[in-house]
Amino acid sequence: MTDREYRVGVVGAGMVGRRLVAVLEQTGFPMSELRIMATSARRQEIAGKEREVIETTEDAFDGLDIALFAGTEGESGASRLFGWKAVERGVLVIDNGNDFRMDERVPLVIPEVNADAMGEHQGFIANPNCSTIQMVMALAPLHRRAGLKRVVVSTYQAVSGTGRAGVRALEQQRRAAAEGGEFEFGPYPCAIYDNCIPQVGSLKDEVPGYYSEEIKMIQETRKILGCPDLAVSATCVRAPVSNSHSEAINAEFERPLSPEEARDILGKAEGVVVVDEPAESRYPLAADATGVDPVFVGRIRRDPSEPNALDMWCVADNLRKGAALNTVQIAWEAVRRGLV
Ligand SMILES: NC(=O)c1ccc[n+]([C@@H]2O[C@H](COP(=O)([O-])OP(=O)(O)OC[C@H]3O[C@@H](n4cnc5c(N)ncnc54)[C@H](OP(=O)(O)O)[C@@H]3O)[C@@H](O)[C@H]2O)c1
Image 1: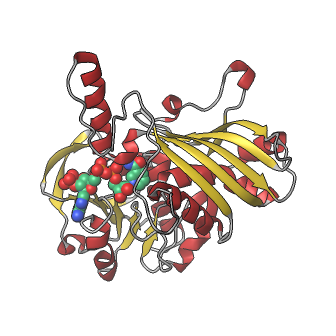
Image 2: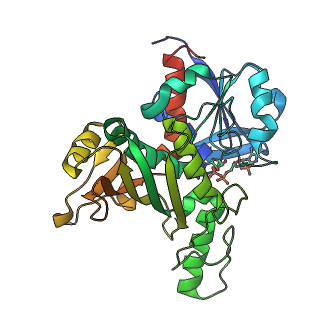
C-alpha cells in the first residue's frame, strides 16, 4: 500500500453524495483534500458536519486525483457535463450514474466480482446500478461454481433509490394519509404510499415493454459477468420502503447446485452474509440492511419446476453497497493497483 494522500472530489451532495463523504471518512481513505461540488455553492451539513460545497465547473476539477460522481443522470447531469472534461485534466473519475456504464471505454466494476476490469480503464470507471450490484454479488460466486444459464428477478425497490425527491414523496404522502391533504406524487406517476409501482425508469426501444431499470439489470449483469448472451429478465417494482432494495431471484445453472452448496459458497463469499433460517422466520430484511455494508441472501431453495435452478431472496442498502460503498471500494482498489 501507499503512504500517499489523494485530492478527492465528490460531485453531488444528495442521497448518494452525502454517503460518499461518510464512507470515504469511515474507511479512512487517505485524503489531503476533500472537495465537495453540487449545482450551487453553499454551506451544507454532510455526514455530521457543516461543510463547504462549491459550484461544479470544469476548473473546479483542477489538481484533483480522483472524483466520485453522484450528480444526477442525463443531459443536465454532472457526468455528461463534466465527467470526461475531468478525465482530460488528469482526474480518475468513478461515476454512479447510468450515462456511460455500457460505454466500451468504461469498465463497470463491482470490486469483489470483476476488479481486474479496472486494468483497462481510460480514466473513467462506472459503478453499476444499485439493483444490479446486489444481485450480481449474490450470483457471481454461484456462477463461478455452476455456470449461470438464466436469471429471472423481481425487485422491491426503496424510494431512496429515486434520490431526495423519492424520499420526500413517500414522507409527504404518509403525512397526508395521517393528517388529511392531497398526495403529491413527486417523481412517481401515482401514489407510492400504500402502493407498489411496477415502473422504475422509462420505456426504451432497446427492449420493448421493459422500463429502463429492467434493461440496466439485463445489460449490466452481462457486462460485469462477461457473459454477453446470458438470459436475464427483470421486473422492477418501486415499493413504499424508505431504504434498502429487496429482490426475489430465480437462477438456473448449467450444472447441478444444491441449496446447501449455494449456502456454503455464499457464506464464504466476500461482502455477502447468509441469513437463512426459514423455520425461525429469519431471512434478510430491508430494515436490517439499512446503514450496513453486506449484501444479505436467504430463502435459498430448489426451484421445484427446474432441477438446476434455485430461488433466493437478496437485500442490501442501495445507498451503501448499491452506490457509495461500491464507489469508494473502487477508489481503494485503484489506489491498491497503483492506477491513480
Ligand atoms: N439513490 C440511489 O440508490 C442510487 C444508487 C445508485 C446510483 N445512483 C445514481 O447516483 C446519482 C445521484 O443520485 P442521488 O440519489 O444522490 O440523487 P439526489 O439525491 O437527487 O442528488 C443529486 C445531486 O446531484 C447534484 N447535481 C445535479 N446536477 C448536477 C450538475 N450538473 N453538476 C453538479 N451536481 C449536480 C445535485 O446538486 P444540488 O444539491 O445543488 O441540487 C444533488 O446534490 C444519480 O445518477 C443516480 O442515478 C443512485
